[in-house]
Length: 105
Image (cartoon, rainbow, N blue to C red; front, side, top):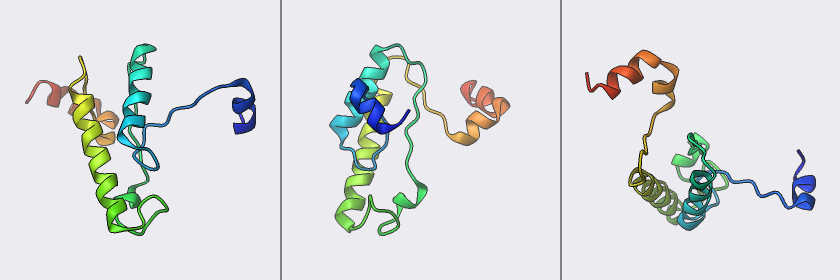
């Protein structure tokens, strides 16, 4: 659905990303998704954003500090939520690894 159509219909989309969002916006988006019953969420960002000067989101040293802080503080907030679990893409792509890690083997 195009951005114009979503705007005309009053549809709000949420993207869980520290790129261009502050901590309050991420928490608000995740809280809304939790309240709606979503069981899975994805915190995503372009991997070059982890380095200063590689994306429009992280130009300066201050941008990098903000990006890191927002990312880590959101993860800390999320992990305090009931039943919260986090997985890396590699864990999700290998169900055997995920199961072993859940069993702390």
